[in-house]
Length: 380
Ligand SMILES: Cc1ncc(COP(=O)(O)O)c(C=O)c1O
Image (cartoon, rainbow, N blue to C red; front, side, top):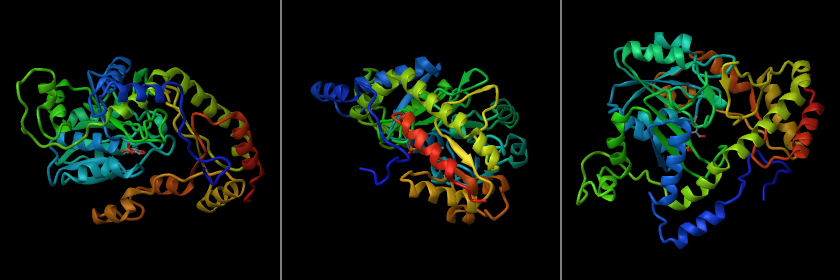
């Protein structure tokens, strides 16, 4: 049980999760690449229009697979936003890459495409845009620069499943993209992820990397009569038990997204006036973007006010949280030369952002309680 009356996140069951898990066990196939893994992959391929989707043990591991697929070598440079989760960057750094930290746009908190070209060098091998809160990055501009310099684009779409940029699904722009099914995400199986392969040239090697560097996937399909070690790889295949849980959630896509849209809109409508009165900002979603309704945040006028609001909500039994400390100022980021003021927008946003409780089962009554508590807050 959470110590909070309203936790920040709570896993929920939408329907068939436990039934599918029981089926999976009774059918006697609980290791990876069983029927539910296939169902999830086909669902995502057909819905998103991605040529191939591979379920993975996490988004972190899908990003590691991307770094292996791109043959990232020591000394290669990878452009990443500083305002992101550590895995966006670390997955490339473990292959020896040097991260080049980009600042973010002050409106969407996505990688600032107007600064991108100035960060490109002859060593740049990849750009990794993150669709923060499931609001698309400016992909037209990013892809144009990537094409001009022949650089791979890997979308970290951990937040953005089923979001769209200019009518096209997030995760279908880069040659590769990654998803997360971690407990906090809209669609979850506790821990899990997926690699979206938009450039079919990567499919065969991706299957090998995911299967410990072996051609076991081809063996299972009867394409070779024994399997063997042929490349680098690791164990990136999730259990079919997790895929069974996930499939039940994916099947309920419309219902889950409708619930999350309602929650997001409730916060937005009921906090508009308060935000204006308190010099706080609500999320910005550009007109050509269809967001995934993953996060609801407030941008407070100062670090002190952000901390005071988190403390105030805590005293009401509500857990709200900040997000992403700037990676260029982390211990590892500083080892790569990161220093204060390198990414000024990131530094300000990181100080001031607060995320409100947001999960599929969050009731309107509980949201009303959160809104009432915020309305009581006055740090001026
Ligand atoms: C932007 C981003 N990328 C990657 C990850 C890592 O996801 P996972 O926990 O599935 O490895 C997260 C986690 O929340 C994230 O926010």
